[in-house]
Image (cartoon, rainbow, N blue to C red; front, side):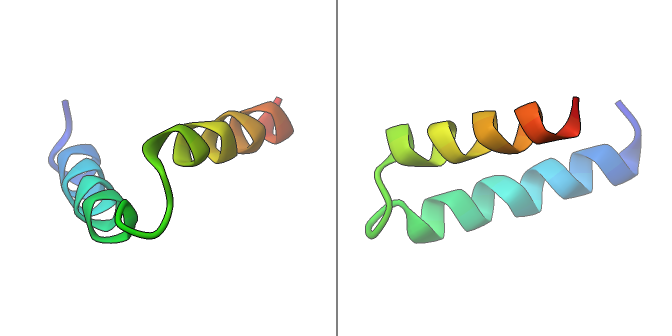
Length: 40
């Protein structure tokens, strides 16, 4: 994995941990699926 990808994932997971108190992980996954669908 490239270092930029690893940096992105580290920051992404930090962000998810920060917000999981307010946004359930299932809702985050749903949002990410919608985002991925829009990319197609």
